[in-house]
Image 1 (cartoon, rainbow, N blue to C red):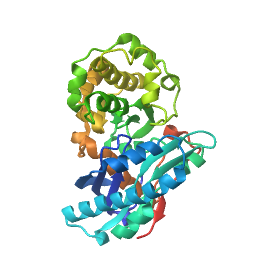
Image 2: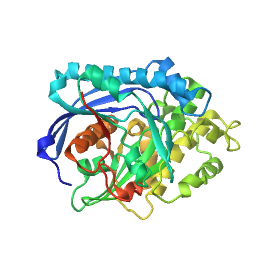
Image 3: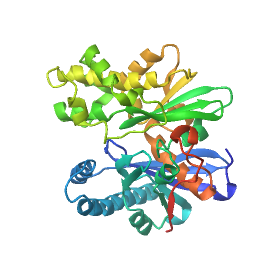
Length: 369
């Protein structure tokens, strides 16, 4: 994939995922197609703001009047995260070429007239930081008939593809998305289904903790085979790619549709949800047999989930992305730094083999400093 040396330099990436645990900010140096992570920052969100964002993820009254203030406030939070990262790394606005901000998705509706809506005002971020912002990465691909997701595969290709190797990269955030790298080619990619979203939701509901650290609580339970097969029978898992999904589909009410969920031991349901994530990922590989499975996102830090993935992959090594130079929890933020670079360099950020778009396209709207 050609790179444009004129656009080499420092870029920032901002990510707020489905789980809404924090804002991730990454400072990335890109030189001649090579990428190096320079600094990172995790920025907390207030519980009040998180609650208001969650409320906007499903239809309700006065959505526009509720969304407008959240859009501005979340932009301020992204700006604070950016300024904190620049301060901690000794960089000023003049040192950063551009900042790629994914924003917080509150609607993702793929289809013939599909759209995707992210909150987090790019105007606020640009005005507060003095850095040009690239945002709204999904809708150009959707206008071209694509799913608008996942967006990480081109970055996974740039970072981890290598001649002669078949590599599957799975990002396990709130949702899980897969990239299939055949040598230096991007052979495909799609959302496999829920990653951490149901695991975290169930843990929060029954333990009060926002996540099941290392899968310790799930280890205390046992997978319920009948429930697992019912969950895996959902039409999403049978739908061929291109496909993408989100919290709009996989949420609390989706889970409670299945008999036995509310009467089983909570830790058994938790173990079953871990197995659902592992099985839906490994089943999704289909006929693509990788030489290795690389895991990124918060799910890479769930030791029990990693063990279940390894059990299903057999002799195929399962590893996180540390060996690629970026820790698993920073891959997504780094991806949006790369996508900001791609926007300035005129490099296509989508891949028709992944999203189903009619052609490659440069992604993102540019908001000057």
